[in-house]
Amino acid sequence: MSNRARIVKPKTDEIPAEVAELINVVDALPPEHREKVHPALKKVVDSTRRRRRILSLVQDALSQLRLDMKYLAFDLEATRRERDEYRQKLEEGAE
Image (cartoon, rainbow, N blue to C red; front, top):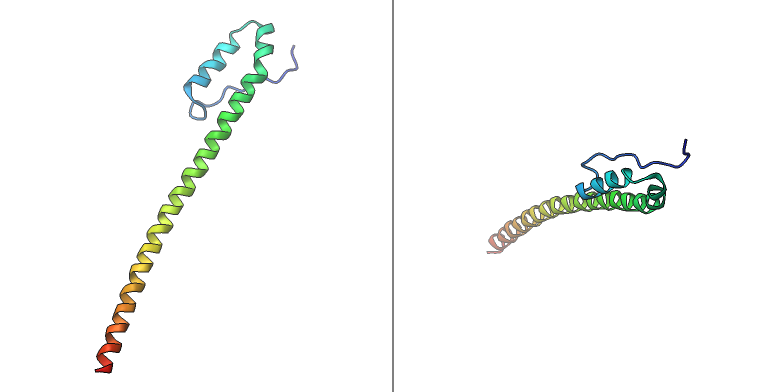
């Protein structure tokens, strides 16, 4: 039995289909070739997962930023309306 760490077959939604296909192709190689390719394949899978996580975090941050911008625009408009109302009351009181 080999003590080497095997790449756990990832869920298909975690990595692109091409990488999953590459994992299957490498798994079908003879053991001596598989041993040579395994470290590089593990790096590819790890970096792909890391990029997916980063992309997900960036997308979440952008969604939150868009929502915050909508709230800020709403608040700014409300503040401008209040300012204009107070200014109008001041001008009416001065007359």
